[in-house]
Each structure stands twice: as structure tokens, then as C-alpha cells.
Amino acid sequence: MISQKSKYALRSLLALARAKSGEAVRISGIAAGEKIPKKFLEQILLDLKHHGIVTSRRGRSGGYLLLRPAHRISFGDVLRVLEGPVAPLPCLSRTAYRKCDDCGNENLCEIRKVFAQVASRSRDILDNTTLADCLADPQFVRADPRLDWIAVSSEGSPAENATL
Image (cartoon, rainbow, N blue to C red; front, side, top):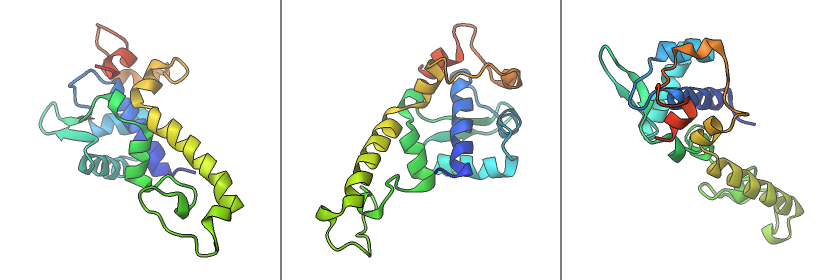
């Protein structure tokens, strides 16, 4: 299960991906549009900034914007920044491996075998699903009047702008 912080992070990143390319979006706009507490969103965006996913711009036209194109930001990238390893067991983690205390032999562990499949499939989905993928798929694009604060280029849809 992912944390509320990660859900808010993904929602805010999708909001930034919908914005016109190069246009910064204010925290207050994201917070209101996505119904995320502003102070919590500030912390989340600061974490994402420190990990090279977003950047900020000061001044009158300031706010946050994606540092990388939406097609280069995967759900796995975001979850690893905020949650740490995505493995269901410590003995399956690629970045924070740790032997399970109660396991005598990893090679014979039935539980590990099942969860190795879970981890593999989860990683595949998370690492190969980008923000742009979500915006390009009509099932993911929200037609919600609350989101009219997000700038959309007259040259294309939010999904098309996300892949620029």
C-alpha cells in the first residue's frame, strides 16, 4: 500500500504534467485543484525538487514545473523517492537488500518465491508507467471542471503537451 504522501505527490506531478510546457504552476493552484493540504504539498514538492523531479521558479510567474519531461518520470521513480524500496520483502529489494531474520534458506523459501513474482510484476508496471502514459490514456484523463486552472496550450490537449 502506498502512503497518502505518495498519492498526493503523483496527483501533483500529473497536474504539473498537464500544464503548458515551461509554465510554472503555483502551489496554491495545485493544492486547491487536487484537494491537497497546502503545507503538506510544500513538503512533498520540496522532496521532489531535492531528487531532481521538479524545479521551482520564483517571482510573479513563479511556481513549480517538471524538471524532466513527463514521459521520463515513472511511478516507480516517484515511489522510490518517497517510500524507499518497492519490494514487498527486504530480501527482494534491489537497493536495500536485507536477509529476513526468520528465514533459514532464501533459495527454499516458498514465501519469497511467490513475492518475487509480485515484486517483479509490480516493478515492471511501476517502472514502465510514466506520467505521460497516464495523460495519454483516456481512462486516466480527468474531465473535471475543478481543473480549469491548469493551462492547456491551444496547440493540443494536456496529454499532448505532457509529452513535449
